[in-house]
Image (cartoon, rainbow, N blue to C red):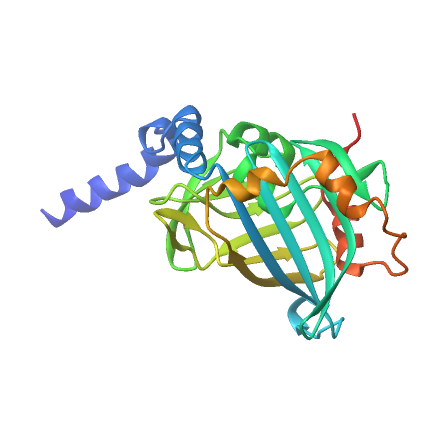
Length: 262
């Protein structure tokens, strides 16, 4: 009996690589439908990310001041504002208004602006995200991230999309073309919607930005009311160009996909 069990185990090990992946994993179309159903529950939002820049694993803080990155989104329209934050004061360094990957307005005026971090979490359809990250969606495996079961699309030679296997939300994104990694963690429910409370960015040069996300009320009419070029011009039309630049924002300009003027 023991010999028979050992033979069965050996045969299963030998045959496992020949079993089609579809026998274990959902189709990509099913995954895209599931993630889209989750993201569509959040029509609009306002979120403030408070990241701090550090030097890779050494975690040595490079900037004493903290950044405040505000993102407002409604439908396919988004607003992004970068401000330096010292104590309770905040000074806007740069801002942009966009529709998907089109840049509609910016302060100061530029021809391109890095996409919001939360765009990759919420707005980008899974197929578009896979294309941007260089992900081989024919490769799938199961793993864990922050003690949560995940389905991983792609492998070490391509971009990767890590999806929480139960919540259908992204927890880790690896860009093969740009070499950065985005991590969304500390998920909890906000009015029935799973949202991350922390975002970390690992850049190709070894630097890291991570920090808490503070969420406003989801699906509010207020977020929709301020996303227009007229409102943007009213706010920044009289502003003089800022005298300082943002080192973290420069990192995003170097590594992240850009919204560009059509």
